[in-house]
Length: 307
Image (cartoon, rainbow, N blue to C red; front, side):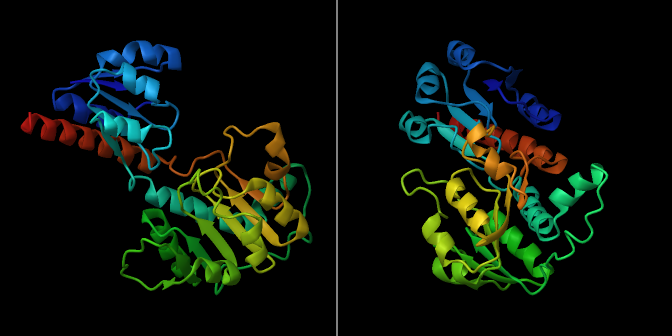
């Protein structure tokens, strides 16, 4: 089969594909170029940059598999692809540990002012008094909204820090360690730290907005390493300015890269930011490459068996 890799793949992943007898083209294409070339391929493997739209799928007359190296599928028109009997794959577990660790990193950064004190020290300052009132994670309530693969890994790490973990997730599946499963309202009202690991639902809108901020205790810390839009950015900025929210750690944004309108939030002294790098570790990228390649090979194998 002819496979187009448009956003890169690890050498190990590419080798799995070629060893299985598939031809792999690694090309960085513009949207216009993609529309012109997609008709030559049986499969396209993407990350987050390439958009596999209805137009791309329509032009991909040979497409049998669309594969996304990563968790979300928001850059792929999944319903339209499935209506064309095209298999859609992703790697929901490959970057789990990396994202979970980043969520904890943001909690620690905000709790101990690492994001601002490091910058001020580079400017020749010694802000010992200004940032001498940090807080510990130990014995704090960690609220988790979304207890999938990543949420569970965050829970494990929160427990290791001695935190009490409260979680809300309607399609909850049992775990092998203790987490208090409760209502969203109780999580919001009792948590000292709230981390989100939910997809963004365009129909429902943000999972955290003004209504939810009003339910939280004063001094809460918000962490979003999930998807831009899960937290209402304007409402978060208001909550930071009012003091209701003590700090926030953000890896994802409604617009990426952020626009000038988002600078007030990104530059806020009580906000720790990173440029959507939750899954961007050497280990996660290796797992993503091999896992998506293995899934593509398996999908073609199954299709051949049924043809």
